[in-house]
Image (cartoon, rainbow, N blue to C red; front, side, top):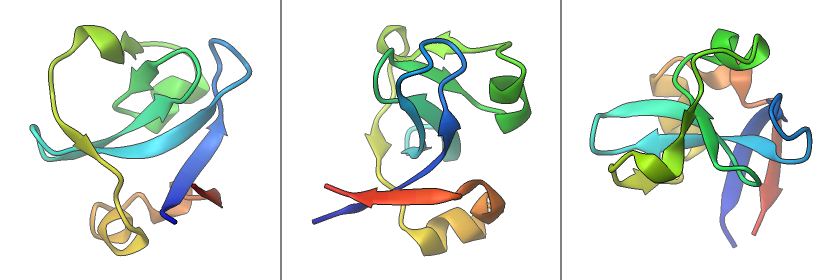
Length: 85
């Protein structure tokens, strides 16, 4: 089982969770909607539903970050919820 950390519900589809995801190609975290595949580099933009991008149209490799990595990237306050899968 792997633990996933997420921030809020998606402002676009209102169904998916915004999962904190590691873009390993560009060495950054972003929020990724598990339902509609939208992404945000800035959590404030996700809150205001602006500057989102369709992750299916962008080429980069991703990984699920652990809580320590999220803390190192200073996104710990965004890891409000978690689930295992």
